Image (cartoon, rainbow, N blue to C red; front, top):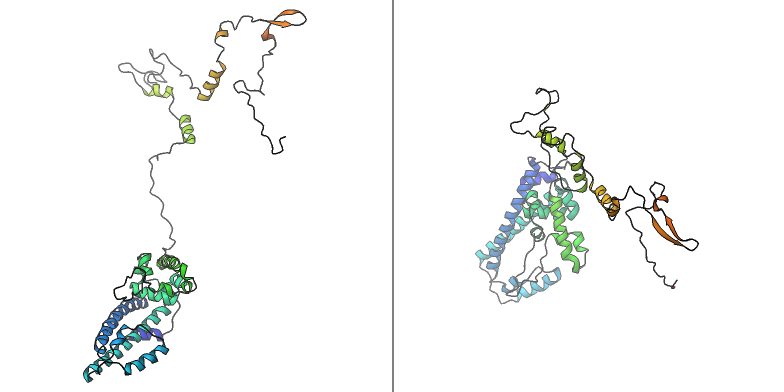
Length: 362
């Protein structure tokens, strides 16, 4: 406590404390651990005082924290109660326990005030979300900022909550007044939306308590000379077809067993040709592969013209009936000038679009 009092008297430098080796940060962590021990000690002394003073005022144990107006009524009721006066030694020990409880509570308040004054330097993000007072209480209850950042949202939301003893009744719908509900945001929220706001604040408090890493330069990736696997797609398939191994290269890479291969310079000099151009292969130059789209168009063009292929070189004629001369012998090939029309497609068809009627029937 002497170190805490000296730290409160000394002026705050205003520097952000991020290193755990700092002596002031260690003092704050020790204050968090000491505050938990003080709470446990206060609970033990409270049970001792309750057991000893029950003989004097039995009804006082069932009362909660009361306002000042009702305290006067309780004081008058204590003078007319059916309790027995305490012995001198029991009364003396009870008064000493009360003084010790007040001293412990005062020490805890000093530590909380010290931690609260340093919260803007230790955790500025957390103080901006929930406030310095609530941030100090959360940090003291979680026993440190690093442990608070690793807690779940439900546990952070329940920090500081104490259930009431309802004497056998159900505690399912019993409300807890936690540290998160002491924030200004929760106090200004309607009661119907307070649960959602507390859950959201608990999640944001965890994010604010985490220390973000510094923006350090990223190291270069390890050089990998192996080719990466490409995903399938139209663009990748076209590139594969463009750069794939041709049939001539496949024949050049093959060697026939027992037959010497030919080379570019002859007598085994230069690059070998493999099975390309050898006797028995029947090929010296491999024909280029046709495109599938061109093959489909040529197939559509040749549809229905197989019967006229035999008489393509002969003259074709047909009869035409005219009102002037009757029967006329004409040549259909005489009308074509040998050029192909570029306006209409030979493989395409005409399409008819059905006209929709308007609202006026026009």
